[in-house]
Image (cartoon, rainbow, N blue to C red):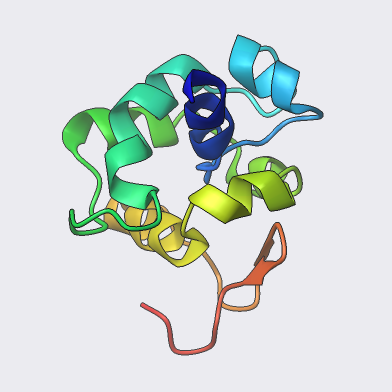
Length: 117
């Protein structure tokens, strides 16, 4: 369960998640920059499938997201991550932190839909 938590947010990551392997995500050693452990801790509640929290990041979550190379992270989102992370929520959280996410951008197998704000 603990490893699944790390894999899920390292999504985030956006977000997140992002790196060349799940091991890199768990260890926080990857090419997309950012504080992976902090990202997981701060943002996980907002992006998990089934979460009842609104998809708006906290101050701590936004601080961690702003250290991440989002396009790089999106290239490394795996199917495993997508089973537990709601990529639509990820986009909303990133945007709520003031980071633009363009329509049509791919993040894993998710494509940001037109008109999404």
